[in-house]
Length: 325
Image (cartoon, rainbow, N blue to C red; front, top):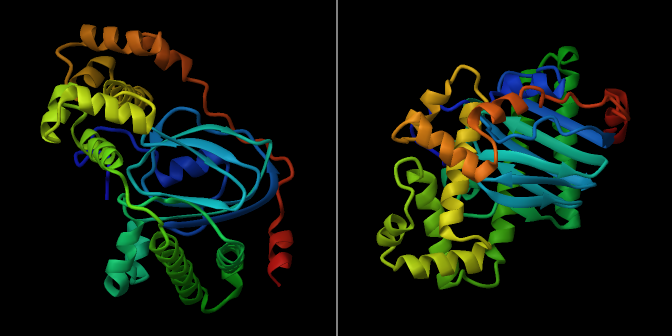
């Protein structure tokens, strides 16, 4: 699943293994990783935009984390969680000094092995891009999700001692997913109001932009596709999103350019071609006009952005396990 771009072969995505290296964490199980942190102090490891290649869910129990998902700003605070789908453009922008959280990352393959799609296809579609994946949880939901995630974590770290660890982990994982689906059902059934016409237009524009931003950069094109005037589209998007349609088009192109420039294998000329600029000169001019840096300057400035987290106040496995038992 890739909500950003169906042809994603040339765009660098941070693989699960790469993210684990950046975070300084050992791999747990192929296609599945669970972390539970309590009052952890750490530096944000990645400030530049990138794509996930797996599902990632983070539930915050203390502190907060700021990030952008497909250009939309989010602040995940205490009692909230966010689910990030594969292919989502993500950029971390800030955090509190200490964070307590429970996180799970899993691949499509691992999801298939658990039989989620076959048994509850219609339910799992709730985790798609049409509904909000940033939710404020109720106290009972926090306790329940935290409990099943901690249980899954405990089963993973003690798997070598258990003869039936694989079966237990798969069933525990299924329990996490079903509880997650239940939370989404609960919250989206209780939405009090339907989106306004302007909100619908803005949502349709964003979906279209995500699909067509490489080849179409004019407000007129998107307005035509939505059967409205460019002026009305600009005013509507500005009112709903706080930015004009033109600003969001440029931001999407620049974000994609940054992702490509972060890949050392991709030359600046190749980036220009992939983004369908007429040549490297016009791409460089566009990039500098929007960011204040040439593509070369941007690439040099990001060579040392892999900041490894500080290993301060990291809870031991024994401490987390004792909280469960």
